[in-house]
Amino acid sequence: METAQNALRPPKKTWRQSVNPDSVERQRTFFDTRVKHAKFDKLLDDLMPLLTPHSESNIVVITGATGVGKSTLTRILLKALFDDFSTTCDQDKSVIPLIAVEAYANGETRHSFRGLYEDMLVQLHEPARDKKAYPELEDGRMLIKQTSRATIGMLRKSVENALKNRKTQVCVVDEAYHMMRFGKDAAVMDTLKSLANTTGVKWVLVGSFDLFDLVSDHGQIARRTSLLNLDRYRLEDSRDRAEFKQIVTKLQRKWPCQEVPNFAAISDELLEVSLGCVGLLKSLLLDASAMQLGNAGAWKGDFLRKAAKANTLRRVIAQEIEQGEAKVRGALFGESFWDDQAFEALQNRMGGCHA
Image (cartoon, rainbow, N blue to C red):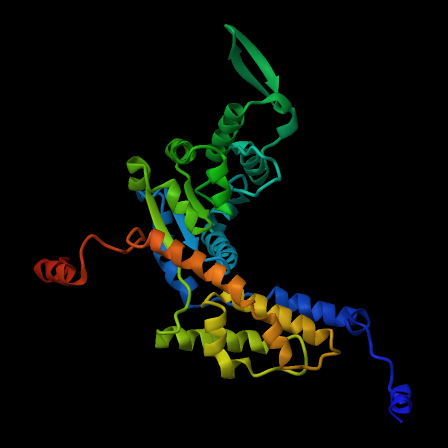
């Protein structure tokens, strides 16, 4: 009897048969969804004044936990800066006030500024990059070297000139922790400090908590550097929980399947399992939606359990976050020399502002 019933059932679709071009496109749209939220706004409010031409913070370091949303923050920052610089660009088409590069790992065992400089020259639309010749003094003779043989020093000089000629004001370096492989921490930061001094460019380095190591042992660098952290959401903070629920609701509205699970009802649990990191939340939801799409759009509660990060892996991430937050604690922008009581006393003594 059971065999006969099975024979009447339509054959179960494979995963590939369930995922058609339309569902792939809906998943891609969900993947591309970016949710701007309060933590972004707070950091940008602190960051933007530091990027004015005559502030002393020539290097701004932005850290944050893995999966907290640093890449999304970088996109939002670039758009905000682009909007600010649009008038300048309209007035002078030769000006490139903003560039963004990534200090990526290229698989080589040795890393240097060469790749970063070459990417910067591309962003600066430096003409005839592959045909330039550079003068260099060698054994008392002046030699002309082609770009293919250019030293890192020559490339740096070319970048320096291009930044000046293009009147660049801000350079954003994403995945900047890879710069720690370029050499000693002090040497890396001395290079950026020198470029900032000679060109007036503000450098924004975005990456993991390890970026703090670049500034922690160097007084001259610390003087010219501001450290900001993209904070995660905390379960013990009622405002954070409310904001996180809004984020979950916004993502729920973009769900790629017709059957939409009520994630907003369990936002606190999602906050806990994702360690308060919106990027980790998004990863969880993407995996769950992929399973649903592969099930012909029908939701199963087990998809959520499977999509949640395994306990051991979650503990590894949590430990890394806790160690990173401890590393930067007390070094962040706004964590003042004065405690609340001392600062309140200062404000009382200062009184109001004078016209």
